[in-house]
Length: 406
Image (cartoon, rainbow, N blue to C red; front, side):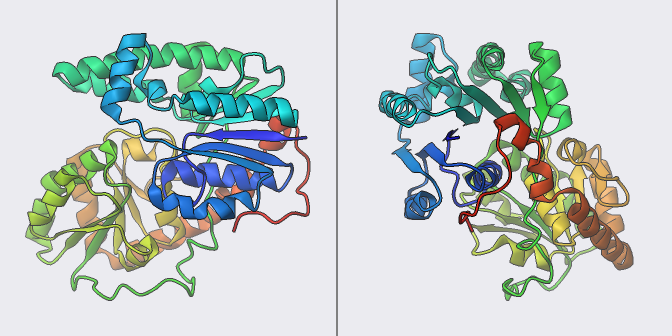
C-alpha cells in the first residue's frame, strides 16, 4: 500500500515542535509502507536535508513557501477564506499532488496540519487521515478575546472561518487525530465530529538522555543558579511566556537569589525577546548548536506559557533530560504526569515565583524530581508506544526491512 504524506513544513530535521511530530510520524510510516511526501519548505537551511528525505521516501514534492503574510491576508479577505489556508495556497502544489495520486494509485493520504487538507483531491476515494495536532481555531479565538483593535477582529474572523473549515475537513476524513485527549475532547465538543482520536507525541530517549556522550558541556554557563526556557522565539506564545516570566517572576527571585539567571534559548528571537536581555540576569542566546547543552546545565526548566495547545515538546524534552520542570497550567494540560512528583505546575505568575524559589532553595528536591521525570517519560512517552494506534488507522502492518530516517 502506498501512502501520500502531505505536510505544511518539510518533516526534516526534527528541530521544532511541529516538525518533531511530523518527522516521527513519517519515520514510522516509512518503516511500513512506501511513502510519498509533499511539503513546503519555509527555511532556506532545510533544503540541504532534501536528499536525506528522498533517501527514505518513494518520492518527494517540495516547494518553497514564499507568500508573505500580508499578501496571504489580503487574498483571504478577498476570497472569504481563513488566512491560514491562503498562506499555504499553491496551484502548482495542487497540480503536482493530483498527478502523483493518479500516477501512483495512492490508497491513503495522511494530512499533517489543517492548512494542507486543501490538497486532498476532490475525487479521491481512498482513506484520509487528518492530523490536526491541535485545535487551531480555539487558539485564534483566545487571541481575539484577549486582544483589541484590528488584530483582535482579524483573529476572531480567523477563528470563525477556521472552525467551519475544521468541521468540513473532519466530515471528509476517516479519522481526525489530535496530540492529546484534551484536544480531541475539545474538538468533539466544538465540531460534533465522531471519528476523533488522540495520538500523542513521544520523545527520543536516546537523544534526550542526560548521560548521552555527545552533549557538549556549556562552557559559558553563568556562575549562579540557572533557569532555562527553550523554544522557537518568534512564536507568539513563547514570546509572551518569556516576557511574563521576566517581568513577573525574575525581579522577585533575584531579591532572594541575587545571582540567578534566566536563559531564553531558541532561534529567531523576536525584537521584543532580544530586548529582554537588558534585564538583570536575563540571557537571550538566539540559535544554539544543541539545546541539550543548556538543558543539562539548568537547575530547572520553565514553560510558563499563557496560551498553549496540545503537548509541549519542550516539557517532555526537559523531563527526559532529568531536569525538574516548572510549567504553567496551560503547558501542563496535555502532559500525562503527576504535578508535584514529576514536575511543578503553577496556575499564576505568583505561584510560579513561589515554586521557583522553592526549587532554587532545595537541591535535593530538584534532583529527586529530575529522576522521577526521566523515569516517567521513559515509561510513558516512547515514540513506538505513542504511534502504535496508527497501524489500525492507516491499515499498516509490521515494520518493513527498510532504512528509516536517522
